[in-house]
Image 1 (cartoon, rainbow, N blue to C red):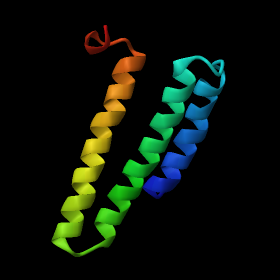
Image 2 (cartoon, one colour; image 1 turned 135 degrees about the vertical axis):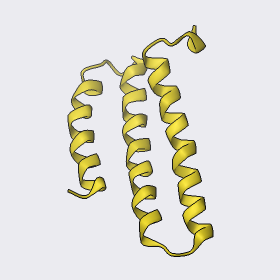
Image 3 (tube, rainbow, N blue to C red; image 1 turned 120 degrees about the horizontal axis):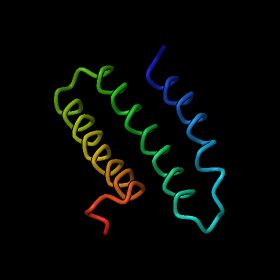
Length: 85
């Protein structure tokens, strides 16, 4: 299965988690944002494999890594990691 297709399946499963929260609950919004970040990360990884230009590959890889770090910050926030206390 293609990574983007896997993301869509995962996003649909995860969607059920955040949709259960009220509109004013931050978890509803952090869940939606994490889904979007995951999709973009997957898209960048796919595009990195499609191009041959080393600079474009580096740009896509770097962007995916930065977004992965941002997604981890959302995970940490949701799990009430010490950095968010």
